[in-house]
Length: 549
Image (cartoon, rainbow, N blue to C red; front, top):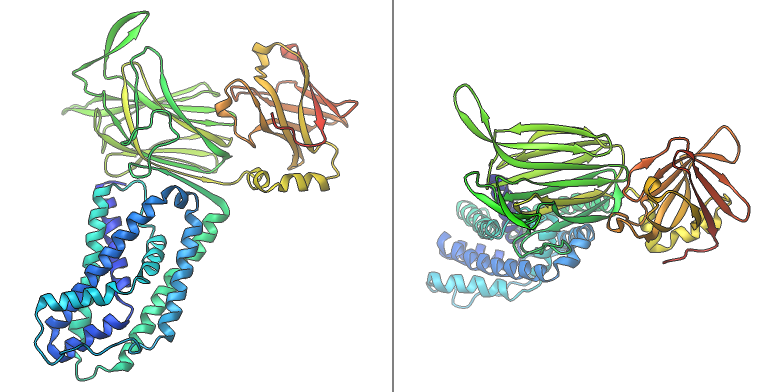
């Protein structure tokens, strides 16, 4: 998000939370109305201000309390949203049934003139004495997603101010309305307000439940920001991932997704610290120290069959009128040996400023967007396999800071829940297909440099869409950071001859081989895979149960 987007995001949610916290017509609401009717609008408003201060303190306590269990909440964000919505439903039902006057005690000395300070203190203690308001606040915070990684601490200050403003706005409205309608205002009106507010809260809760169930069914979310930290990245600091490269080769940081996914969105903010075009940045090469101006940085996406790398550095775009600072973006698609170069000059910080980035893979289309305050699409390309990881790098002499990372991915791999719940074991026990089950590398006769086996793998073979897919379990020795449980290693497609399969092999570097590769079921629960053009052969053996290495 840009500056104004983030500010608007926190302010409107803060105002909404402030109003909804104050709106239920409980004892303090009746006290405010009573003082307005008895002693005038100012007296009632001062009471509301005291209540607003109390609500703000509870909101701040809730916010800091939530931050202490941030890691738990981010893993269970959708469950928390569901729980928050259920709390709101309970509160809405409570409003329908609650008698607004049942908890009210007549204020002492109400026939005397009370100072503003005493009215504010009275409203404050009247509200602060009811800590159950925390449950409503937690529900509202969860429902409105009041904490997202793209927004910095300073925006949250604006958010809490907005909560206070929203509460004051409500008490302004209440005291103004009561003062204007003092001749017609009675307890029945309070019942009506309660029910209207109850319906509003109920609508928010139902929407939250629908959203939470939907997200829980098919998505995962990971956030890294200054408050949550940047672990498990290798170059994590309190401010972000800072990669400084003083060598003549790329220096990178990588995060492997918990599972492969064909629907991924990655947002982050990047600052090219060593991007000043007038300075030289030193690095070492061949035992000596040298330097470069305007070093590049970048990021990359790995998938089951491909890797897409994007290199970024500042440049200049020359027009007939002027010379404009711009970003030079080079895109490399490894499998297709594809290279594209783009120059972007509008709405970007070309050298050492911050830029927002939004990378989106959906329906096989990978879209890249960037900008300093607002995002614009700059490129699209096709990726026909599931994403397995993300990474960032700095070129020689480069230094880059990556912050405010937001990663969303669909949990489309059916193995994830099965592995954690042992559902896969139960499924295989009931399967009558002789190919489905656990397999491991038995022996091999191969040219390692040609097929790059990379380890003594264990797999699980499942029949999917009339093809057999061997999903990786463990055993990778080469490039093991890129192999996640459930990644596809082998795809076998039935041929015209019974018992013979055409094979697609994914090697240790996640590159695909398929030319004339065949597999055939052998004796003793073995499977032989022949690589004629690589003069190699691998034999797999079926296991009765899962063997973890």
